[in-house]
Image (spheres, rainbow, N blue to C red):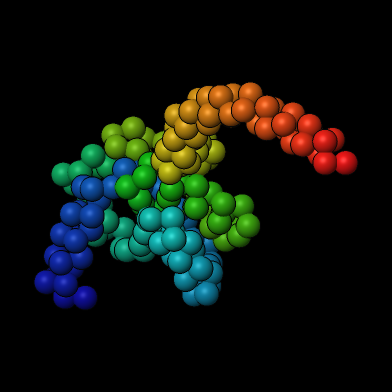
Amino acid sequence: MDRNQKAEVVSALNAYLADVGVVVVTRNLGLTVAQSTQLRQKMRDAGGTYKVTKNRLAKIALEGTSYTGISDLLTGPVGLASSADPVAAAKVAVEFAKTNDKLEIVGGAMGEVLLNAEGVKALASMPSLDELRAKLVGLLVAPATKLATVTQAPAAQLARVFNAYAEKNAA
């Protein structure tokens, strides 16, 4: 890479990191290309990305963002998993690390809050933003559903009584 290409990579990574909700630092302990592609696909499906860049360029890109604290974690072969949803990237990275011993969770950050490996795993155990929205909608709809069921019950009972009398008289 020449100097201009490095500058483009740094500026693109800096702009991207300014908009994400969480960054998870993972250590690559010999992932194959197929495994790395599988991780990237799972990350994309969850709404996140997984990037492998030179550590020095990533440290420069972290300057000026709220994630400057994770620059100490960028040693050795690392990758950055990130997403706008604070839980999505952590959940995918932790699930992939459980099934593949060649990916290790090093730590991460959620805004200016630094997370160690256990913090990332705790974050991954939380429900995602979409799951929380679904639960909230379910809670809002439940009383209306119950009210409709209760108000229909007397009418349904009357209909069954009338039907029973009609069948009795027909026989």
